Structure formats: C-alpha cells, structure tokens
Image (tube, rainbow, N blue to C red; front, side, top):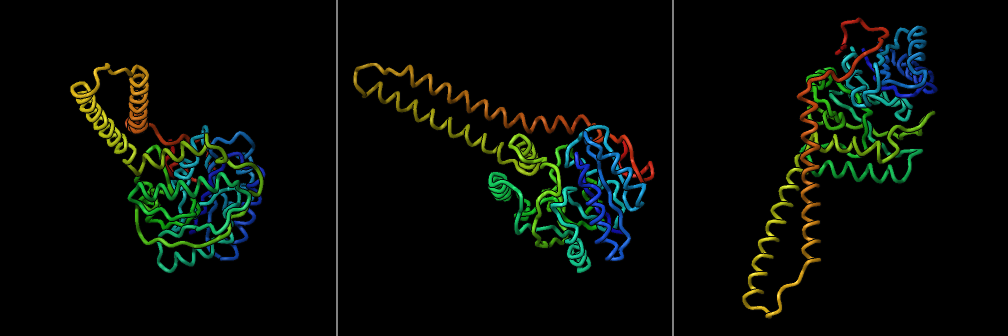
Length: 316
C-alpha cells in the first residue's frame, strides 16, 4: 500500500486535477494506493470537493479539521491516518508533480527509507522568496546539528518505520523538514523541476507567513539564540569593565576638566536596555514553546472523516 498525503487549505479548484494526476500515475504503476487529503479548516468548498472525490473513488480518503491548525499539523494528521507501507508527502497545489512518484518508489525499493525531492528549478516564485529560502536553509544547517538537505521542501517519500518514528514525536511547534533528518535511517534525493501552482495563491508568500515557520525551525533544533544572548551579555559586561578602568585612569591622570557625557550615558543606557529586551525576547520564544508543551492540548481536532475507521489516527 502506498499512501499519498496532501494537506489542503483553500485548494478547491486544484483537488480534482490532483486526484486525476495521482490516480493516473498510481494506476499505471499497478500498486494499491490511497490519497489522504487533510482539510486544514479551509474557508472555500475544499471539504465538499473531498467528499465528492471520495464518493467517486474509494482511493480518496479525507480528514477535516474543526478549524485551521496549520500546515505542519495537517501533515502530522495525514501521517497519523495514512496506512501505507510507504507514505508520500506532497503539496496539494501540484507544484510537486505526481509523475516523480515512480522515481521515489524505485529508490525506496533499493532500500532507502526516506527519498526527498531536490528542486532543480522553481517556477512561478518571486526572487524574494527564492533568496530568503536559500538563506534560511543554509543558516539552519549551520546553527543546528541536523543535516537538512539544501533545496528541498516537504515533498518526500517515507518508509513506514520512519512514519512510526515521527508519530512518537508529539511536540506542538513542528518542523517536519527537520524532524525527518533527525530520525535518521537511509536517505536519498531525487531531482525534479518544481512547477508553478496549478491554481490559487501561495500560503507562504509574505514575511508574516514565513517568519513563524522560521522561528519554529530554529527554536526546535537549535540553542544558538540562547547562547548568543549569553555571549552578548559577557561582551557587554567586558566592555563595561574596560570603561570603568578607563574612567578611573582619566580621573587620576587625565586633565583636570571633569568628564562630561550626559549624551553618551543616555545612548549607553538605551543600548543596554535594547540588548536586555532582545535577550528577554529570545528567552520568551523558548519559554512560550515550553508552555505550549506543558498544556498538553491535542495537536488537532477533527470535524469529519471520509474513508477511515473512527478509531484511526489521533482523533480527538
């Protein structure tokens, strides 16, 4: 059994074409398959389209959240409900072509547990998004101890034992692209050309949308921001100690004119106040994530499912 998992958020015009292309590829392979569509609180008719597709084709199965819980949680729900021996995670917008699935499955049969898609080109994306994506993934590789492949996204195939390992990781602020390399196992890449969206608009096109994703990635796998705050504190303390010594020497051996420096003092105080607030903000980011974990709320709540037994997955 091969499971294809696709999170869905306002993808009503895309879903019929997604089903058509996935069905064409998988039927040509002759493998048993299922298409698991996770409706992440869409405001359009995505849920109704999933229902129609399930009625037309039992290969299509669906999960609909009670509200929008976010892409990473939708991916988690898809992995919870998928029953396949291998699970292919893809975007619903057809930027990750289903025609790549046979190449991933071939690598899987060679013995690889994770086969991730490596983008050789990315059509329909702005220079700003391309630049920030390259910068972010090169930064995250340097500040963490996990080897996240460059130029990859969430498009990947995972063996059942990798999926089971991910299901044992219940953290709230999830970064799947880092969690998959963290679990290890044999991993390999398959190159492909990423297409432009079939329809609709990108859900990660602005700084406001991308920044929380980047913060989750950094705080989930790196302590460097906390360490930088500590190093900055030592630096400021060292500069203050040197300034005290300099002031004493000027008092003892300098000119008789008293030291004047109200403006300098004001700038120094404001600078130190800014540094302290930055450090508190960094600590607050980590503390907020600890608070989320301690509350122990379910990752998602389900309003409706299609094609699954009621006891499947992490239904709450």
